Image (tube, rainbow, N blue to C red; front, side, top):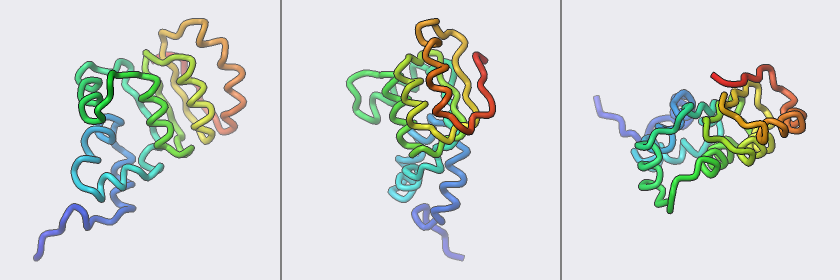
Length: 148
């Protein structure tokens, strides 16, 4: 029996599997395996569940800066990048503790299909006061969790 090649795997199957992975794997692992896997990670269905770790590790930051040739790590930039990858298809979002007001606005504008939203527990009142105005953007929101 002949061996199958990675690039020959069905795109729908790849998207289904990749949609179950953590953000770190979708950004730093899968896209670098082969071109077809990279192309699969561009499918918004891979980005329906945006579960950022509470604390973004230094090793993740370092690898992200190296792989994407960034000047420096920017948490808001990362959140915007991932939200854009979701193409408006994200249904769940867990924001990291380093989230700022711009990240909330990006989530409200870029995730209209959101059903589940978890906000970090270390939010400052300066970020919280904008929540009521953003809530109207999430017509399908079923659950809002404040903190872990």
